[in-house]
Image (cartoon, rainbow, N blue to C red):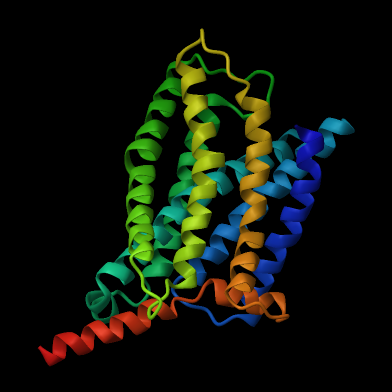
Length: 286
């Protein structure tokens, strides 16, 4: 699994760095690109951790315990932050699509910044709780049988599978159904396609591993090779998003534009703006 994951992680690191540079310096910031930028930063932190782990696996060397603790925490924070901010992106996109008038008139000015800051903080707290209750993920003395670890696992199940994943699935499904009802006159916004593709990738590669981890944690008789699969799936999930954006942006208009133009095109929501303007005009005419 590691031999397969290494080239994927290298491509992922390169793609995520490109997206971060484009969103930071070359592309106009919007309410949605803030989420994409922070999700990409989380993906990059995960990939750097995994690549470091791969190299230490192939060429073992002594690592200071404090450095190891910090790297493990960065990985946990990255995983949780990506998950939470994908949900926030779906939530805000849902509001902008289905409550266009309210969204344009009453949305708090700094909502994106507030949500991103809150979710990074919440992710940090959850990661610290997970880390100190169950010990680091790749350590041989991982202890999952303690009471605090089981309580922490129940808390994670509640937060992830009873709050965030249902919200993510509901909002994404609503956006997807609306996309399917679009006509040729009002094609779906590229942002909706990008969000739907990203969420599908997350559910396939991340949520599935989370689900099997829970089964293996609570049912000792079930033996699923989740560790090796999770390493590969983590690498794929954190690596493919930049290339999904580039493919979507290039597919919409088959041109030889620079990559930053493809990225900007993939994150545009002009279709919703046009449609919302038409809805407002219809309401005024009535």
